[in-house]
Length: 180
Image 1 (cartoon, rainbow, N blue to C red):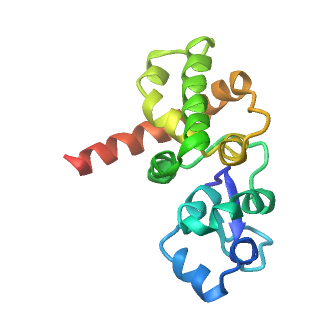
Image 2: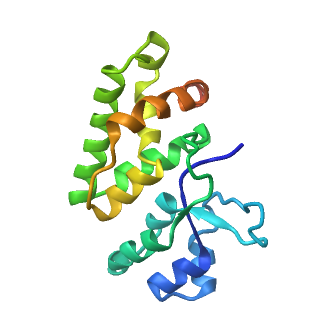
Image 3: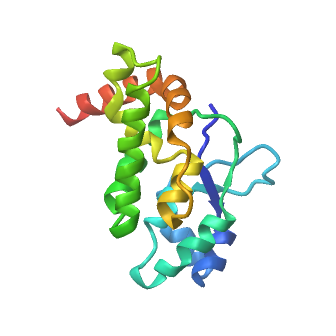
């Protein structure tokens, strides 16, 4: 399945942080990756997961990573529900202004969905996992990490909720069963 979120390559990680390819590979070894069609065999790592591997002294590399990140599935609002742990960890990792923007995005998501015509019991039941996954939307991730103009949450949230509702519900309940 396709997954719309921001991705970076190891080369981008190395250029932004100044670490060697071996160090970058070691840091990203547990991060799930994609090898896109026409990607020439290069691994692409979710930006939200990659920034969490940065050392404190490398925090200034975030804007460069965001600049090099790309959405491999432009225009597709679907984010695989398996990315829910990455999304939750990413929100927990954020500090200061990033955390404020992440919370604002998630709160805006809930408000936008609540005010839309798609606000049905099946969507409401999934608001927790959906608002967590929403931080992985390319526009939202970019805004959380570097600020600037906020994304148009009122227009993004309803389509995102519809596209991700059923898979998010299944994954969320599966995670709850594993925790129990």
